[in-house]
Image 1: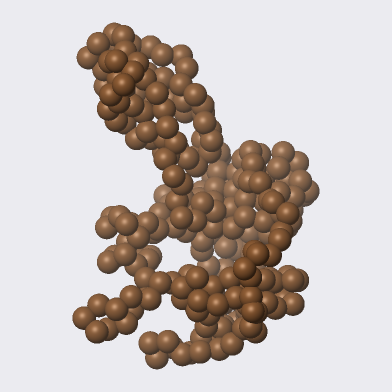
Image 2: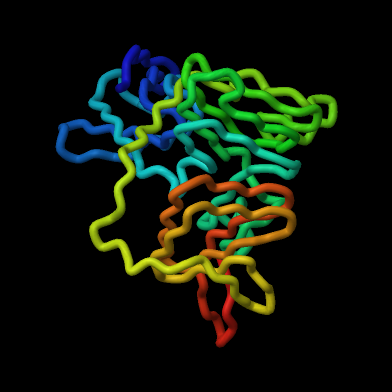
Length: 265
């Protein structure tokens, strides 16, 4: 919704009331038939102030939400989130050369839009430990965040400052968790299921290597230096708990062939 329109200095200023971490496009029209994009806006806040160029003091305006990112949340959980060990959680955009290298994740270009959402309204709903979260955390109103002396939550500038170690940047933990967790049901065309298996890709041994198949396990745990690579459209039905600790990781990749060479993006 656009409200509180004020025209001054050849521009309109609006209050935009929408959703957190959403991208909107503001369009203008003179006849309510032909619409022209005026500005695109992204913000972590639900309510924000935006300004758009406008030579005339009257006109028609509308707002549309653009499709969200492929992965809207780095982590979204109904119950407690516990991040063990150290490391960091950040984000990147494979379609933007400023935020990736040849479509691949580049730590030097990583961004601070990694969002964590937890639906548990308890103390210690999210335990960051010594992990550095470059982004925001959304909680239920009664939920709280716990972190260790080397952990942190906030923007890149805040996280990279050693003075702010063990701290949360103001405004980066919010009580606006609104992610809908639908009842878990297996897809109609799920199966036949297979167990998780190891594999080798591009000379690297993976503890788990998944491809275009369906899998089912009673629980999934990766620790120490174990790693999982997912290529293609793999679906995993985990009946119990999923745990990733130490230096272990899960890599969501896409295999492509360029000049006869296979690579993962």
